[in-house]
Image (cartoon, rainbow, N blue to C red):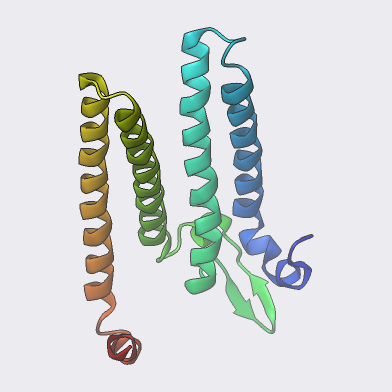
Length: 178
């Protein structure tokens, strides 16, 4: 409730659990990032790899929970509002609302795309400095992943657009005129 006290006064019992889980995963993400960065010479190679892998998993989990909260604001569920009071609260239904999967998938694909762009740029930089076969293979593999994530992200957006076209005709007509 520190960040948005008025919002959390009303919505805290409904959506507070996903906020708490997001905070927990964010802290785990920071721990694994610190282990990865500062443990490169102190950890064995296997533990170093695992800390990097867990950094990615906990980051994905943290973003999924915060997107759950954001999607709940777009599609509130998991409670009944009676006499200016939330009753019959179900935090799991609030988290897994109608918009959660679509928005979480969109966010995850965007993160994978951004990571692929960064890796492709890094591989291209090193390939320019020292051209060799291995660098070219790494660059090509990264570009292939980027194309896959780009296609999946576009498919996700297009299916969302077509699914909601009848619901939001005015909004999409307005955006089309811009």
